[in-house]
Length: 101
Image (cartoon, rainbow, N blue to C red; front, side, top):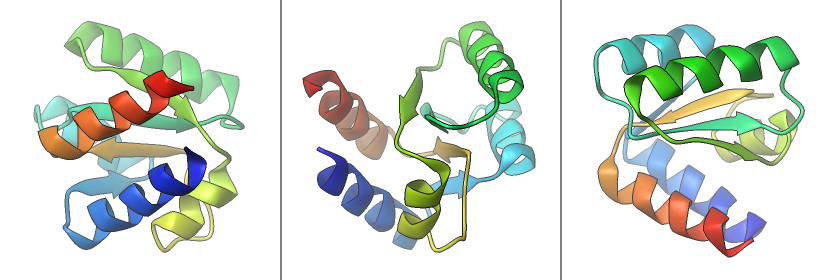
């Protein structure tokens, strides 16, 4: 699953259907563009609590995924702790992939 998911993240990035980083993800959530939030498994507890709360308020799935380094490599950054998927199709695919685990 991890390789499929990381490949899907790369496609999502190339399609311009995701943003990474705290400020960009908060902005996408506030503007109603987010379909799912992906948090790195090694993100800080503060960041996890914050996004779990915001996602609950907006009724958006908040899923934990691989490490910050793995997410970062998949989206062309050194690291990334939080990703906003801004496309319903990509979001649904991530939800299906992570539900299999």
